Image 1 (tube, rainbow, N blue to C red):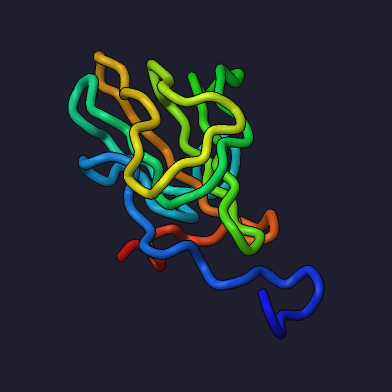
Image 2 (image 1 turned 90 degrees about the horizontal axis):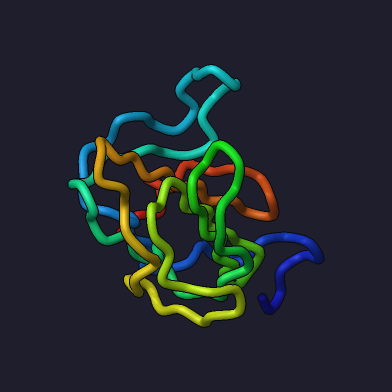
Amino acid sequence: AQGAEAGAAGPAPAPYLLPVAGRLVAGFGVAGDIGASKGITMAPRSGGQVVAPAAGRVAFAGAYRGYGRIVIIEHDGGWTSLVTGLARLDVQVGDRLVGGAPLGNAGQDRPTISLELRRDGEPVNPLQYVG
């Protein structure tokens, strides 16, 4: 970003979308088994479509222990989104996405999808940026 200090993140990706339609089941910073939540968790309908929260490039797409299938999207300006809990992936590493592009689907049996938004690697509350 022009005029930004070295290492400082640029403006948040906009528009920023929730990856699924559903009920919020865990908010940012909520205490859990492994410390405070670094994101939010939602309960979509079974098999619900999961979408990219904002434009970016797929940096990782695959199984990750304890999180099901995950997608990491690098956005401009030092921002990264991590979407976890997918049952099926429809993207591959290197894919360029627009916001709202399909990432895959939620599972069938009481699925949960989690979203983390990071600015220069530090977790921030994604609900602050949802348009």
